[in-house]
Length: 123
Image (cartoon, rainbow, N blue to C red):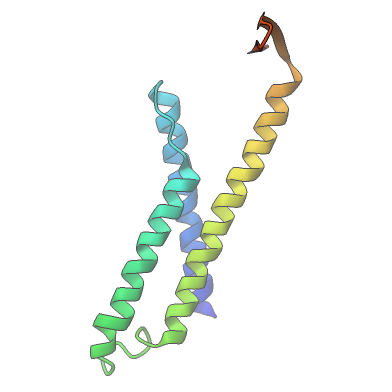
């Protein structure tokens, strides 16, 4: 349980770092549109695949040396920490997107540009 909590806290700290870096890149580079949640999910998926390879291929051959890390239960604790952090990242993106959409829709100026389209200008 301690390893699970440590893995979850460290993954959430990495999520915060990725979100901050992506936000700064989006602010500093005018054309950048980095999505921190998607980048973190991709990193967590890659880490999960590398963790599975290490657990079942590398550590499995050296049971006496890496006994606590090579068990399937230890892997599933780490995997569940990765999955929960990825779910938190996607939930954060969903909530932030809904808050941003409701915030921007209140003060918009709608101009009919043709019979079939209209332009929305945030105020």
